[in-house]
Image (cartoon, rainbow, N blue to C red; front, top):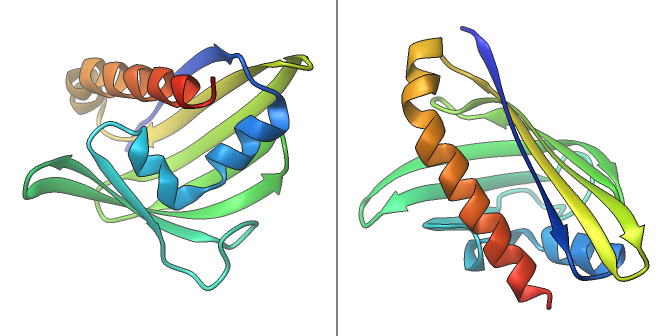
Length: 141
């Protein structure tokens, strides 16, 4: 299985701690992630070892994505490993303070999938994440 990289960066007009606090509120992510419901499945809700599930889809058709936090460095970096049957790989949220009121949000994923499959899903994946991140930025204004 080949690992494929995807990354998007956006600028958010909000202080880094406010951005981090909103990102780390896992169950609220469904409010800005396109067609996604997110919930915590572990006893801990923040930090290394936190387990999260998300279903992305329309109606009754969706894909379950299970994750575990592997690196937690507030208010800058959160890494996860995707542990599901379909979605495998790693993901990263990385925040950089540009000014006291502006934060860069770098999102990236290393998706394990056959190259042709990744090429086929890349446009929808990229567009969906780009729209979701723009929605997230708007919630913080």
